[in-house]
Length: 277
Image (cartoon, rainbow, N blue to C red; front, side, top):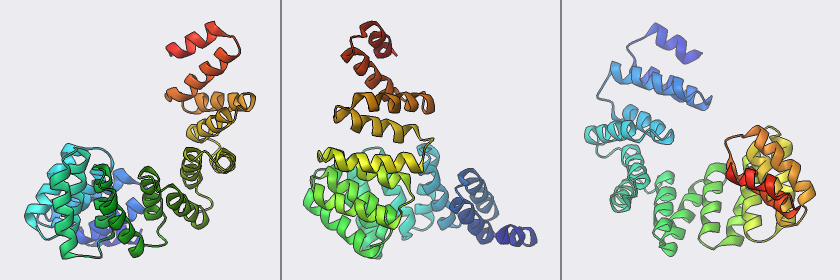
């Protein structure tokens, strides 16, 4: 409200509009944030930082063509801007153009060695190329710069699990749960890592926490059902899959497992109809 009032008093201030956009993003109003950034750009079309921010938001929303337009514009306006290079690199990575993505991130990190997102994203790109040793170093640098940031811990933890450093990754995901015990997604991420390491009993505990915290999440119910299914507790798994179908009707996985349960129970015709769906 403060920034809205300031912008009303000074409607030609691009930076006030930019700060309002950041406040809207923090409130998860992405459309409002993007619209406000566009207003800021209309006020002053030569501010690279604002264009880079709009490109970053659109990149996160999957609007790659528009994101590329703003990120490349920001880069041309201010080539040394770390955010422009970093986010443009991630756009290239989404398009599987990993060589230019890596080059941009390394340039950004030369200018700012404390650019946490740069180390994090470079680590993910290197991991994608199976360059695990180099990836591990960059991910550890990101952790050192933000040891209590839950998003960084979660991203690095999941990456470490995928790279085969399962126990290290699980330890990081445990830290996320400790720091954000009321975040259902944190419990789900930990549950998936535990299930992948065949610790199904511990995974079941975490899916239970996720369902408790987010009872309207079809994804949470599905993964709880999946762990129960893998524990051969199909009677308990079935209602979880049914709930997941009701809460997330476009999600095909719950129907697949319900079909498997029907097949196990000899209900072949019902199973066949579910498999077709």
